[in-house]
Image (cartoon, rainbow, N blue to C red):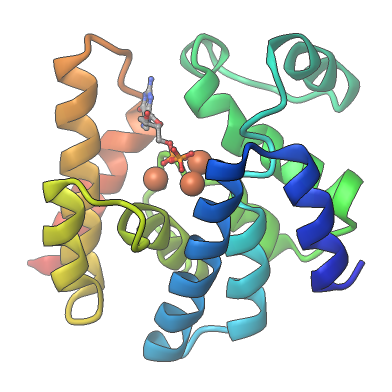
Length: 188
Ligand code: DGI
Ligand code: FE
Ligand code: FE
Ligand code: FE
């Protein structure tokens, strides 16, 4: 599938708002890849497709988890927000024909991050948070650092997510905490 076909299919499968967000993340990811010397074409595809599972719907989500034999832990199972990045990897492969493991992993890890992220994984994690459509305060602050100090920017993204999760009483996945700790350790 070429990028135009991917865009057409994605547009059919996402809400308009989510599709625009995806295009924004794609463009931000390309800018970050240029800045940090990552593979620009991989960043473009991973950015475009990172949320491809976002609007799947609950029933279909359960069906696909079974179909692809996706293994999840207790916390992931109870969070649609966490499941969409995991399921996204499988949808990108099965429905968009993406077989590049680096791209698939960047999609898989885009919500929580993980310790020891690759540059492409960091780029998608950050691009998702700072794309121009995100206009909350923390996104503005993180945007200032994205092109100066990527690890510091990751700390800011993780902090904002953790504060939001605490504030709304949601489960915090250990990966979310590990991402923050790993990025802080990288600053020391
Ligand atoms: O899909 P997007 O909205 O573009 O962004 P995303 O994939 O980074 O997802 C953000 C959502 O994921 C946000 O509502 C917070 C949630 N999230 C991130 N880390 C965790 C989490 N939710 C839970 N329950 N636990 C986490 O550790
Ligand atoms: Fe997402
Ligand atoms: Fe994110
Ligand atoms: Fe996103």
